[in-house]
Length: 433
Image (tube, rainbow, N blue to C red):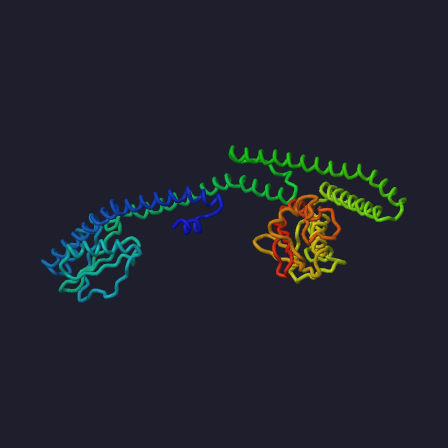
Protein backbone atom coordinates (compact mmCIF):
# COMPACT_ATOMS: atom_id res chain seq x y z
CA UNK A 1 0.00 0.00 0.00
CA UNK A 2 2.84 2.38 0.88
CA UNK A 3 4.53 1.78 -2.47
CA UNK A 4 1.34 2.50 -4.44
CA UNK A 5 0.70 5.71 -2.47
CA UNK A 6 4.27 6.83 -3.10
CA UNK A 7 3.71 6.40 -6.83
CA UNK A 8 0.38 8.24 -6.79
CA UNK A 9 1.21 11.17 -4.51
CA UNK A 10 2.67 14.28 -6.20
CA UNK A 11 6.42 14.83 -6.07
CA UNK A 12 6.72 18.65 -6.17
CA UNK A 13 6.31 20.77 -3.04
CA UNK A 14 3.69 22.92 -4.84
CA UNK A 15 1.31 20.04 -5.52
CA UNK A 16 1.96 18.45 -2.14
CA UNK A 17 1.09 21.69 -0.35
CA UNK A 18 -1.91 22.11 -2.65
CA UNK A 19 -3.08 18.61 -1.73
CA UNK A 20 -2.56 19.28 2.00
CA UNK A 21 -4.74 22.41 1.82
CA UNK A 22 -7.37 21.37 -0.73
CA UNK A 23 -7.95 17.80 0.46
CA UNK A 24 -9.33 18.85 3.90
CA UNK A 25 -11.50 21.51 2.21
CA UNK A 26 -12.96 18.98 -0.22
CA UNK A 27 -13.55 16.40 2.52
CA UNK A 28 -15.20 19.01 4.73
CA UNK A 29 -17.43 20.22 1.88
CA UNK A 30 -18.46 16.66 1.07
CA UNK A 31 -19.31 15.95 4.70
CA UNK A 32 -21.30 19.17 4.98
CA UNK A 33 -23.14 18.41 1.74
CA UNK A 34 -23.89 14.86 2.84
CA UNK A 35 -25.20 16.04 6.21
CA UNK A 36 -27.29 18.79 4.57
CA UNK A 37 -28.91 16.55 1.97
CA UNK A 38 -29.50 13.62 4.28
CA UNK A 39 -30.48 15.40 7.49
CA UNK A 40 -32.15 18.57 6.20
CA UNK A 41 -32.90 18.90 2.50
CA UNK A 42 -34.29 15.38 2.08
CA UNK A 43 -36.53 15.84 5.09
CA UNK A 44 -37.79 19.23 3.94
CA UNK A 45 -38.35 18.01 0.38
CA UNK A 46 -40.20 14.97 1.66
CA UNK A 47 -42.50 17.16 3.77
CA UNK A 48 -43.23 19.46 0.81
CA UNK A 49 -43.94 16.50 -1.46
CA UNK A 50 -46.26 15.01 1.15
CA UNK A 51 -48.13 18.31 1.39
CA UNK A 52 -48.66 18.59 -2.39
CA UNK A 53 -49.61 14.90 -2.61
CA UNK A 54 -52.20 15.42 0.14
CA UNK A 55 -53.66 18.43 -1.71
CA UNK A 56 -53.87 16.40 -4.93
CA UNK A 57 -55.54 13.52 -3.08
CA UNK A 58 -58.13 15.82 -1.43
CA UNK A 59 -58.88 17.59 -4.72
CA UNK A 60 -59.30 14.21 -6.44
CA UNK A 61 -61.74 13.04 -3.76
CA UNK A 62 -63.75 16.27 -3.99
CA UNK A 63 -63.94 15.93 -7.77
CA UNK A 64 -65.06 12.31 -7.57
CA UNK A 65 -67.97 13.40 -5.37
CA UNK A 66 -69.18 15.63 -8.22
CA UNK A 67 -67.38 14.51 -11.41
CA UNK A 68 -68.32 17.46 -13.60
CA UNK A 69 -66.38 20.10 -15.53
CA UNK A 70 -68.04 22.79 -13.41
CA UNK A 71 -66.77 21.18 -10.20
CA UNK A 72 -63.26 21.05 -11.65
CA UNK A 73 -63.41 24.78 -12.32
CA UNK A 74 -64.62 25.42 -8.78
CA UNK A 75 -61.71 23.40 -7.39
CA UNK A 76 -59.30 25.37 -9.57
CA UNK A 77 -60.76 28.66 -8.29
CA UNK A 78 -60.31 27.49 -4.69
CA UNK A 79 -56.80 25.98 -4.97
CA UNK A 80 -54.99 28.28 -7.43
CA UNK A 81 -54.80 31.54 -5.37
CA UNK A 82 -53.72 30.23 -1.97
CA UNK A 83 -52.16 26.81 -2.67
CA UNK A 84 -50.60 27.62 -6.07
CA UNK A 85 -52.24 24.47 -7.47
CA UNK A 86 -54.28 24.61 -10.68
CA UNK A 87 -56.83 21.92 -11.63
CA UNK A 88 -58.03 21.11 -15.17
CA UNK A 89 -60.25 18.23 -16.28
CA UNK A 90 -59.23 16.69 -19.60
CA UNK A 91 -62.33 14.74 -20.48
CA UNK A 92 -61.69 11.42 -22.23
CA UNK A 93 -57.89 11.74 -21.91
CA UNK A 94 -55.54 9.01 -20.65
CA UNK A 95 -52.24 9.12 -18.74
CA UNK A 96 -48.99 9.40 -20.77
CA UNK A 97 -46.85 6.30 -20.94
CA UNK A 98 -43.44 7.95 -21.33
CA UNK A 99 -41.54 9.00 -18.21
CA UNK A 100 -38.98 11.83 -18.12
CA UNK A 101 -36.65 11.57 -15.14
CA UNK A 102 -35.13 14.56 -13.41
CA UNK A 103 -31.34 15.04 -13.16
CA UNK A 104 -31.74 14.71 -9.39
CA UNK A 105 -33.46 11.31 -9.36
CA UNK A 106 -34.07 11.52 -5.60
CA UNK A 107 -36.57 14.32 -6.22
CA UNK A 108 -38.68 12.08 -8.45
CA UNK A 109 -38.42 9.22 -5.97
CA UNK A 110 -39.61 11.43 -3.12
CA UNK A 111 -42.61 12.77 -5.06
CA UNK A 112 -43.55 9.30 -6.36
CA UNK A 113 -43.48 7.87 -2.84
CA UNK A 114 -45.69 10.69 -1.51
CA UNK A 115 -48.23 10.36 -4.36
CA UNK A 116 -48.31 6.58 -4.01
CA UNK A 117 -49.15 6.88 -0.34
CA UNK A 118 -51.79 9.62 -0.80
CA UNK A 119 -53.52 8.82 -4.11
CA UNK A 120 -55.33 5.51 -4.64
CA UNK A 121 -55.77 5.85 -8.42
CA UNK A 122 -53.22 5.75 -11.26
CA UNK A 123 -51.13 8.89 -11.65
CA UNK A 124 -48.31 10.36 -13.73
CA UNK A 125 -46.03 13.35 -13.21
CA UNK A 126 -43.26 15.26 -14.98
CA UNK A 127 -40.68 17.41 -13.15
CA UNK A 128 -38.61 18.37 -16.21
CA UNK A 129 -40.95 19.98 -18.77
CA UNK A 130 -41.43 23.33 -17.01
CA UNK A 131 -38.66 25.12 -15.13
CA UNK A 132 -40.89 26.52 -12.38
CA UNK A 133 -43.81 24.06 -12.23
CA UNK A 134 -44.56 20.37 -11.75
CA UNK A 135 -47.09 18.58 -13.97
CA UNK A 136 -49.13 15.96 -12.05
CA UNK A 137 -51.95 13.96 -13.71
CA UNK A 138 -54.47 11.62 -12.05
CA UNK A 139 -56.67 9.13 -13.88
CA UNK A 140 -60.43 9.43 -13.15
CA UNK A 141 -63.45 7.85 -14.82
CA UNK A 142 -64.21 11.02 -16.80
CA UNK A 143 -60.65 11.41 -18.10
CA UNK A 144 -57.55 12.93 -16.52
CA UNK A 145 -57.30 15.55 -13.78
CA UNK A 146 -54.24 17.66 -14.50
CA UNK A 147 -52.62 19.47 -11.56
CA UNK A 148 -49.90 22.07 -12.11
CA UNK A 149 -48.04 22.97 -8.89
CA UNK A 150 -45.33 25.53 -8.27
CA UNK A 151 -41.93 23.83 -8.09
CA UNK A 152 -41.05 25.43 -4.73
CA UNK A 153 -44.16 23.76 -3.28
CA UNK A 154 -42.72 20.34 -4.15
CA UNK A 155 -38.95 20.73 -3.80
CA UNK A 156 -36.93 22.92 -1.43
CA UNK A 157 -35.09 25.47 -3.63
CA UNK A 158 -32.48 26.08 -0.94
CA UNK A 159 -30.72 22.87 -1.94
CA UNK A 160 -29.65 24.22 -5.32
CA UNK A 161 -28.59 27.53 -3.77
CA UNK A 162 -26.57 25.61 -1.20
CA UNK A 163 -24.85 23.55 -3.91
CA UNK A 164 -24.04 26.71 -5.86
CA UNK A 165 -22.42 28.44 -2.89
CA UNK A 166 -20.67 25.24 -1.89
CA UNK A 167 -19.03 24.91 -5.31
CA UNK A 168 -18.31 28.64 -5.49
CA UNK A 169 -16.64 28.62 -2.06
CA UNK A 170 -14.52 25.60 -3.04
CA UNK A 171 -13.39 27.24 -6.30
CA UNK A 172 -12.56 30.55 -4.56
CA UNK A 173 -10.64 28.81 -1.78
CA UNK A 174 -8.76 26.71 -4.35
CA UNK A 175 -7.73 29.80 -6.33
CA UNK A 176 -6.56 31.55 -3.16
CA UNK A 177 -4.64 28.41 -2.13
CA UNK A 178 -2.97 28.15 -5.54
CA UNK A 179 -1.85 31.78 -5.43
CA UNK A 180 -0.59 31.45 -1.87
CA UNK A 181 1.23 28.15 -2.45
CA UNK A 182 2.76 29.48 -5.66
CA UNK A 183 4.25 32.43 -3.80
CA UNK A 184 5.72 30.02 -1.25
CA UNK A 185 7.05 27.44 -3.70
CA UNK A 186 8.56 29.82 -6.28
CA UNK A 187 11.47 30.90 -4.01
CA UNK A 188 12.29 27.24 -3.34
CA UNK A 189 12.27 26.49 -7.07
CA UNK A 190 14.46 29.54 -7.73
CA UNK A 191 16.92 28.33 -5.09
CA UNK A 192 16.99 24.87 -6.68
CA UNK A 193 17.52 26.40 -10.15
CA UNK A 194 20.33 28.60 -8.81
CA UNK A 195 22.02 25.60 -7.18
CA UNK A 196 21.72 23.60 -10.41
CA UNK A 197 23.10 26.52 -12.45
CA UNK A 198 25.99 26.96 -10.01
CA UNK A 199 26.76 23.25 -10.28
CA UNK A 200 27.01 23.72 -14.06
CA UNK A 201 29.33 26.68 -13.63
CA UNK A 202 26.78 29.22 -14.90
CA UNK A 203 26.38 32.80 -13.67
CA UNK A 204 23.82 33.21 -10.85
CA UNK A 205 24.48 36.84 -9.97
CA UNK A 206 20.77 37.61 -10.46
CA UNK A 207 19.65 35.24 -7.71
CA UNK A 208 18.29 36.91 -4.57
CA UNK A 209 16.83 35.00 -1.60
CA UNK A 210 13.14 35.67 -1.01
CA UNK A 211 10.09 34.00 0.44
CA UNK A 212 9.56 32.63 3.95
CA UNK A 213 12.20 33.08 6.64
CA UNK A 214 13.48 29.51 6.34
CA UNK A 215 13.76 29.78 2.55
CA UNK A 216 15.63 33.10 2.87
CA UNK A 217 18.03 31.52 5.35
CA UNK A 218 18.65 28.62 2.96
CA UNK A 219 19.24 31.05 0.08
CA UNK A 220 21.64 33.18 2.11
CA UNK A 221 23.53 30.08 3.25
CA UNK A 222 23.78 28.97 -0.38
CA UNK A 223 25.23 32.35 -1.41
CA UNK A 224 27.76 32.18 1.43
CA UNK A 225 28.73 28.66 0.37
CA UNK A 226 29.05 29.89 -3.23
CA UNK A 227 31.42 32.66 -2.15
CA UNK A 228 33.51 30.24 -0.09
CA UNK A 229 33.75 27.80 -3.00
CA UNK A 230 34.62 30.67 -5.32
CA UNK A 231 37.42 31.83 -3.03
CA UNK A 232 38.69 28.27 -2.74
CA UNK A 233 38.73 27.80 -6.51
CA UNK A 234 40.36 31.17 -7.03
CA UNK A 235 43.06 30.44 -4.46
CA UNK A 236 43.70 27.02 -5.93
CA UNK A 237 43.86 28.44 -9.44
CA UNK A 238 46.28 31.19 -8.40
CA UNK A 239 48.41 28.71 -6.50
CA UNK A 240 48.60 26.30 -9.42
CA UNK A 241 49.36 29.08 -11.85
CA UNK A 242 51.96 30.60 -9.54
CA UNK A 243 53.72 27.33 -8.76
CA UNK A 244 53.69 26.28 -12.40
CA UNK A 245 55.05 29.64 -13.53
CA UNK A 246 57.75 29.82 -10.83
CA UNK A 247 59.01 26.34 -11.60
CA UNK A 248 59.41 27.18 -15.28
CA UNK A 249 62.71 29.03 -14.77
CA UNK A 250 64.63 26.28 -12.88
CA UNK A 251 63.10 23.68 -15.19
CA UNK A 252 64.39 25.57 -18.23
CA UNK A 253 67.87 25.75 -16.68
CA UNK A 254 67.80 22.00 -16.10
CA UNK A 255 66.87 21.44 -19.74
CA UNK A 256 69.78 23.61 -20.91
CA UNK A 257 72.25 21.84 -18.62
CA UNK A 258 71.07 18.41 -19.75
CA UNK A 259 71.30 19.47 -23.38
CA UNK A 260 74.97 20.29 -22.82
CA UNK A 261 75.70 16.90 -21.22
CA UNK A 262 76.96 13.83 -23.04
CA UNK A 263 74.27 11.59 -24.51
CA UNK A 264 74.40 8.75 -21.98
CA UNK A 265 71.70 6.50 -20.54
CA UNK A 266 71.62 8.53 -17.31
CA UNK A 267 71.30 11.77 -19.25
CA UNK A 268 68.44 10.41 -21.34
CA UNK A 269 66.65 9.24 -18.19
CA UNK A 270 67.09 12.68 -16.64
CA UNK A 271 65.71 14.31 -19.80
CA UNK A 272 62.65 12.07 -19.66
CA UNK A 273 62.08 13.07 -16.03
CA UNK A 274 62.38 16.74 -16.92
CA UNK A 275 59.98 16.30 -19.85
CA UNK A 276 57.46 14.66 -17.52
CA UNK A 277 57.79 17.56 -15.09
CA UNK A 278 57.30 20.01 -17.94
CA UNK A 279 54.18 18.15 -19.14
CA UNK A 280 52.80 18.15 -15.61
CA UNK A 281 53.35 21.90 -15.17
CA UNK A 282 51.92 22.63 -18.62
CA UNK A 283 48.79 20.62 -17.87
CA UNK A 284 48.16 22.32 -14.54
CA UNK A 285 48.94 25.78 -15.91
CA UNK A 286 46.58 25.33 -18.87
CA UNK A 287 43.86 23.97 -16.58
CA UNK A 288 44.26 26.86 -14.15
CA UNK A 289 44.00 29.41 -16.96
CA UNK A 290 40.90 27.76 -18.38
CA UNK A 291 39.22 27.72 -14.95
CA UNK A 292 39.51 31.44 -14.57
CA UNK A 293 38.79 32.71 -18.07
CA UNK A 294 36.37 30.62 -20.11
CA UNK A 295 32.62 31.23 -19.94
CA UNK A 296 29.82 28.85 -21.00
CA UNK A 297 28.96 29.01 -24.70
CA UNK A 298 26.27 27.36 -26.81
CA UNK A 299 27.83 25.00 -29.37
CA UNK A 300 26.62 22.32 -31.76
CA UNK A 301 27.29 18.87 -30.31
CA UNK A 302 28.25 17.24 -33.61
CA UNK A 303 30.73 20.00 -34.46
CA UNK A 304 32.18 19.86 -30.95
CA UNK A 305 32.72 16.07 -31.06
CA UNK A 306 34.28 16.32 -34.53
CA UNK A 307 36.78 18.93 -33.31
CA UNK A 308 37.67 16.82 -30.27
CA UNK A 309 38.36 13.60 -32.24
CA UNK A 310 39.99 15.29 -35.23
CA UNK A 311 43.37 13.73 -36.02
CA UNK A 312 42.82 10.83 -33.63
CA UNK A 313 42.07 7.24 -34.51
CA UNK A 314 38.61 7.14 -32.98
CA UNK A 315 35.42 5.59 -34.36
CA UNK A 316 32.42 7.84 -33.71
CA UNK A 317 29.00 6.20 -33.77
CA UNK A 318 26.21 8.29 -35.39
CA UNK A 319 24.08 10.43 -33.09
CA UNK A 320 21.65 13.34 -33.22
CA UNK A 321 23.16 16.80 -32.93
CA UNK A 322 21.81 19.57 -30.70
CA UNK A 323 22.87 22.83 -29.11
CA UNK A 324 24.48 22.51 -25.66
CA UNK A 325 25.88 25.11 -23.28
CA UNK A 326 29.45 24.24 -22.24
CA UNK A 327 32.94 25.66 -21.83
CA UNK A 328 34.22 24.40 -25.19
CA UNK A 329 37.98 24.64 -24.62
CA UNK A 330 37.85 23.01 -21.20
CA UNK A 331 35.42 20.27 -22.17
CA UNK A 332 37.42 19.55 -25.31
CA UNK A 333 40.48 19.08 -23.09
CA UNK A 334 38.45 16.76 -20.88
CA UNK A 335 37.30 14.66 -23.84
CA UNK A 336 40.76 14.65 -25.39
CA UNK A 337 42.20 13.35 -22.10
CA UNK A 338 39.69 10.48 -22.11
CA UNK A 339 40.44 9.67 -25.75
CA UNK A 340 44.22 9.92 -25.28
CA UNK A 341 44.00 7.71 -22.20
CA UNK A 342 42.15 5.08 -24.27
CA UNK A 343 44.46 5.38 -27.27
CA UNK A 344 47.58 4.86 -25.12
CA UNK A 345 46.51 1.43 -23.98
CA UNK A 346 44.28 0.11 -26.77
CA UNK A 347 44.13 -0.47 -30.51
CA UNK A 348 40.42 0.28 -30.92
CA UNK A 349 38.65 3.31 -29.51
CA UNK A 350 34.92 3.95 -30.05
CA UNK A 351 33.02 7.10 -29.03
CA UNK A 352 29.22 7.17 -28.69
CA UNK A 353 26.74 9.80 -27.48
CA UNK A 354 23.46 9.01 -25.67
CA UNK A 355 20.79 11.36 -24.31
CA UNK A 356 18.74 10.01 -21.39
CA UNK A 357 16.74 11.54 -18.51
CA UNK A 358 17.88 15.15 -19.15
CA UNK A 359 21.54 14.06 -19.21
CA UNK A 360 24.04 13.73 -22.03
CA UNK A 361 26.35 10.71 -21.89
CA UNK A 362 29.57 10.76 -23.94
CA UNK A 363 30.99 7.23 -23.82
CA UNK A 364 34.55 6.24 -24.77
CA UNK A 365 35.16 2.48 -25.14
CA UNK A 366 38.47 0.73 -25.80
CA UNK A 367 39.76 -2.83 -26.13
CA UNK A 368 42.78 -2.38 -23.86
CA UNK A 369 43.73 -4.22 -20.67
CA UNK A 370 41.28 -2.20 -18.56
CA UNK A 371 41.54 -1.27 -14.88
CA UNK A 372 40.51 -3.52 -11.97
CA UNK A 373 37.26 -2.37 -10.39
CA UNK A 374 38.87 -1.95 -6.96
CA UNK A 375 41.42 0.54 -8.38
CA UNK A 376 39.15 2.65 -10.62
CA UNK A 377 38.49 5.30 -7.99
CA UNK A 378 42.22 5.85 -7.52
CA UNK A 379 42.93 6.94 -11.11
CA UNK A 380 41.05 10.21 -10.56
CA UNK A 381 43.55 11.30 -7.91
CA UNK A 382 46.25 13.71 -9.03
CA UNK A 383 49.65 12.16 -9.87
CA UNK A 384 48.12 8.67 -9.54
CA UNK A 385 49.61 6.03 -11.82
CA UNK A 386 48.70 2.38 -11.49
CA UNK A 387 51.30 -0.35 -11.66
CA UNK A 388 49.11 -2.68 -13.71
CA UNK A 389 49.53 -3.54 -17.37
CA UNK A 390 47.53 -0.49 -18.43
CA UNK A 391 50.33 1.83 -17.28
CA UNK A 392 53.48 -0.08 -18.13
CA UNK A 393 55.92 1.62 -20.48
CA UNK A 394 53.50 4.48 -21.17
CA UNK A 395 54.30 8.14 -20.78
CA UNK A 396 52.18 10.30 -18.48
CA UNK A 397 52.22 12.16 -15.21
CA UNK A 398 48.92 10.95 -13.73
CA UNK A 399 46.96 14.16 -14.32
CA UNK A 400 44.76 13.35 -17.33
CA UNK A 401 41.78 11.74 -15.61
CA UNK A 402 42.10 14.02 -12.59
CA UNK A 403 41.85 17.14 -14.75
CA UNK A 404 39.07 15.55 -16.81
CA UNK A 405 37.05 14.84 -13.65
CA UNK A 406 37.54 18.43 -12.42
CA UNK A 407 36.30 19.79 -15.75
CA UNK A 408 33.28 17.46 -15.71
CA UNK A 409 32.37 18.53 -12.17
CA UNK A 410 32.73 22.18 -13.16
CA UNK A 411 30.00 21.52 -15.76
CA UNK A 412 27.78 19.87 -13.14
CA UNK A 413 28.62 16.39 -14.42
CA UNK A 414 30.91 13.48 -13.61
CA UNK A 415 33.09 10.75 -15.10
CA UNK A 416 32.69 7.08 -14.26
CA UNK A 417 34.65 4.00 -15.30
CA UNK A 418 33.23 0.57 -16.06
CA UNK A 419 33.83 -2.52 -18.17
CA UNK A 420 33.57 -1.99 -21.91
CA UNK A 421 31.72 -4.22 -24.35
CA UNK A 422 34.96 -4.22 -26.37
CA UNK A 423 36.75 -5.99 -23.52
CA UNK A 424 38.63 -2.99 -22.16
CA UNK A 425 37.65 0.11 -20.22
CA UNK A 426 34.59 2.33 -20.65
CA UNK A 427 34.81 6.00 -19.59
CA UNK A 428 31.40 7.72 -19.37
CA UNK A 429 31.22 11.50 -19.25
CA UNK A 430 27.81 12.55 -17.88
CA UNK A 431 26.66 16.14 -18.45
CA UNK A 432 23.33 17.77 -17.53
CA UNK A 433 21.41 19.25 -20.44
